[in-house]
Amino acid sequence: MIISLDTSNFLQNYELVFVTGHPRSGTTIVHALVCSGAEVNDYIPESSYLTGMVNNFIAGFNNEIHNVNFFGSKQAYVDYTGKQVRNFVNDCWVGFGAPKVLALKDPVMMNQLDALNGIFPSAKFIIALRDPFEVVSSFCKVKSRQGIVADATVTQEIARNAAIDYKRAIRFKTSYPERTLLFHYDSVFDGSYDQKLSSFSPNIRCNPDNLWKSKFVKDVQAVKTPWITDKYGEMMGKVSRTEPDLSEEQREIVKRFTFEDYEKAVSLT
Image 1 (cartoon, rainbow, N blue to C red):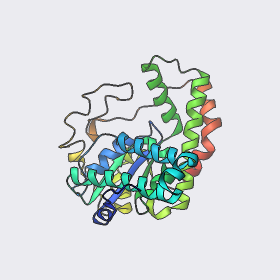
Image 2 (spheres, rainbow, N blue to C red; image 1 turned 90 degrees about the vertical axis):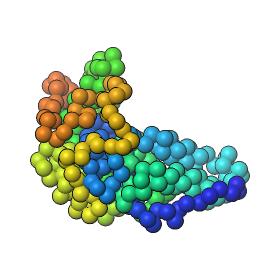
Image 3 (spheres, one colour; image 1 turned 180 degrees about the horizontal axis):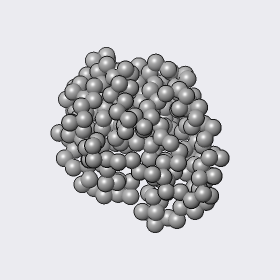
């Protein structure tokens, strides 16, 4: 197949950490806390280019009729395209200052856990968990800002998707317990975040004074989207917890679809 540079050996020089979780589970603040540590890259935006590459990897992996003959074999496809993804991540490591820990974040990674684990078998994963009432309430507010009425049908779809990611978190933590941290959003507010993160990786020591500080992102509020809230960029002491804003009907939907899986996931934190 086509010859290209293989930088896979660079991965021996640093610890690769993926931060993910269901959307509205606090992945942004968790990533910012991880990046506040002196041995971690400065805070950076979501790595959607990477997740786009991994989506292509998955699509090609599942399209043997095209790719087996094109690349010579399925393993040749995996070797070549996996190398492309690793090369990009290693480029990120160099570009962000060659830190001891490279922390990349995107909620979309929840759909890609197995692929990422196959491409990066020594990587660590921090999966954010949050109370499903809070997740669904926050998601409904995003829908509202998008001009969508969060009725029972929309609420049910949100709750179903949250339950799917709770199941994914359970399965991945059970399969790879040493390389997976289920990090509860509560830890951001009860002060246990540093202990949880440093126990998972001694190279991650949070420094709240450096929260959001970055050579790469000057203003996290620079681009307004329905997904961004006023909490982005705020220091820990200025952020208060938002109570869920759900009707009784919505609460019953959330209970029915999420509680069993959520409670099982919490038991693994």
